[in-house]
Image 1: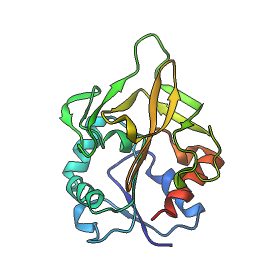
Image 2 (image 1 turned 180 degrees about the vertical axis):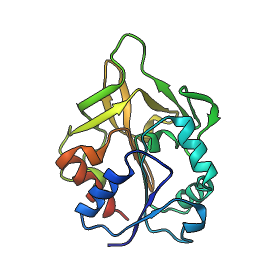
Image 3 (image 1 turned 45 degrees about the vertical axis):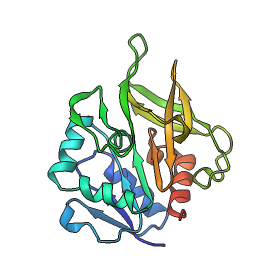
Length: 204
């Protein structure tokens, strides 16, 4: 299996994502700066726990933002998790003065007042195309573990790969060519999450 780059910018779930990858016998390289970024990466995972603004500032400070944009543009398989999903968009209500990576058009919104925030715990994801290789072996409506107060609203609804209801429907996952991203935590989602990560490792 080819090497998977795991991007370290101080995200709280990096170790648990690394542990999930190791449990699948994946070859993992953790990198934390542009200097470590290989010229031709084979696969990239961007984890994420924390605020949008702090995370984006760390990516920029470590010189990782431009290599991420270039790798995705060059067709490298890329998986964003939680805040690593949100950072792909243009901006977030959480940090209005901080621009995101801008790879996907759209904004990250906060759940409406009146519901319990954060959205935390197990919830189902209705898959747009259950036959897509990313979802192999997961059925029509797998359950995943969520912890978040914000969620992306893609400008292009055709990229939404899964939707979850938390009093309102939101994009729990997107797929666009070689770009995959999920709001839930596959590394905390037991068998379903490990199956999804395994599927990602086998793509392309």
